[in-house]
Length: 241
Image 1 (spheres, helix red, strand yellow):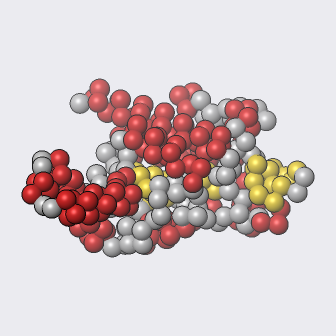
Image 2 (image 1 turned 180 degrees about the vertical axis):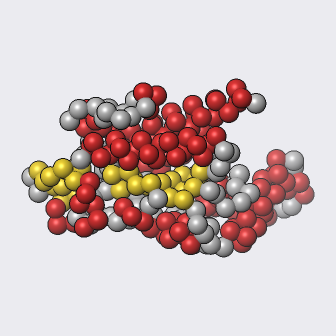
Image 3 (image 1 turned 90 degrees about the vertical axis):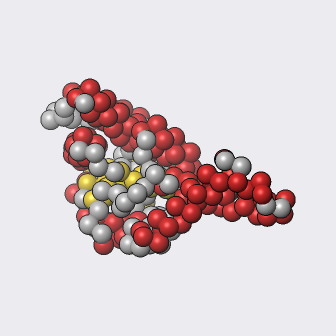
């Protein structure tokens, strides 16, 4: 497959690199979602192959949307709870200064944000008290209990403790595993950018990216392109200030 023709040079999207990262490998042909058919190239050894020209086209649309969103100061929440992708998602989000969720999606994160926000505020206040030595006034047993609570709160809310309001965009790396994140986003009119493997309904995302969501090289490729786009947009915003 040749490099996509109608791309912006700055995005540097090459289908050859996508193929090397395995973005084109879908699921077994028996697991196909009918709405993914327009993005398919064919079947190889019983596995659906994604058309990388279509991937490049949809990835370009998603990256341009993200670029504009960053320029407008919008908040992007990255969601990747698949075990093998957690560390990469966290690293990418932190490098870009984005909120993220890598543990189980907590029901109500978007649809009941006021309650979630209270728990985040409690978490941050407990962190402050520990840092400023206020917890030293408690007994050793009580301090141990606070430390355990802080660990649990870090797992649940550590990635979203900078969220003061509902995000403008949710970027989901596995539409099937984190379907609740998508449902809540749709309920709150939050835009969804998501990787769409061959076993999911791509129309549930506002900006679907047809690609393998299981292989780490594939996920890493997408995250790298998103990071490049965000960092570039952030740099431009800083220069314009």
